[in-house]
Image 1 (cartoon, helix red, strand yellow):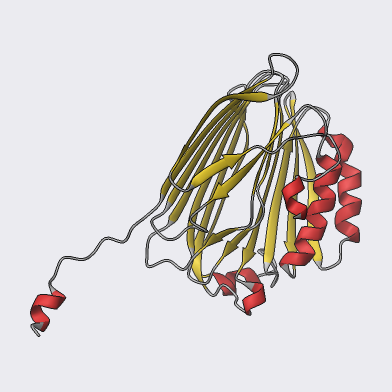
Image 2 (cartoon, helix red, strand yellow; image 1 turned 45 degrees about the vertical axis):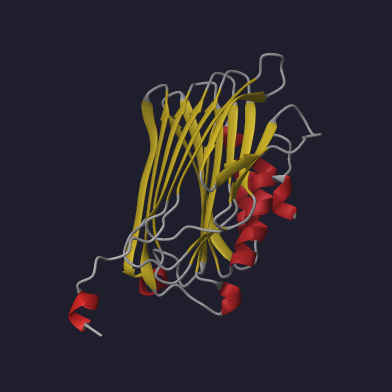
Length: 285
């Protein structure tokens, strides 16, 4: 066998998924309905019947089972005037060990006058040596309502795995009427396990979450959310409120000793913050 020929043979390109979804909803008769839906590759959207309220609940399904290095997923959502949309995921998103490339997620949301969007995917599980680059860009009107929940589990707990090495880059930008009111960049790279041990990062916790609400009058939830966080077992965190000119935002940061501890707290917070007092139905399946 010619070893030189083998070593210098063209490298086989691994198959990658480049999924894309576009969704537009409106409410011409007071009930939210689909106006446009486009889905490509592994990303599918399903809309079960809703018997509670007039909003629409969409479920994202990644038929590839997870994201690997080099995969990408792009989701564009427009919630038009007076419409109400909740978007969640069928299951936890898994980000597998990478051979060097990042898995990329781009989220682009627009919410119109007197419209609301709840972005509530289930947890993202980062396998050891996973690499994820995620960007969230949101454009709101002054009367819009927006709630985002993003939770990360650092390693496969039930497999006894902790995330030792890898990378997470998470960028959020939220604008109201063109004004930037929330921006954050999280970047952990290399020895992620050591970084998570730092008291200012996760203090040894294995699961983290950020919840952001942008809505007029959202300060009404401040004390109730603080009480939920203080009573939670195995979870530490804090709740803050800002008035940015005429715009208001409520921000919650959480660290859980386990993913289960974190989820119990997040469920209570979502029930407090959601307009109908419930979590997405698929969360309990």
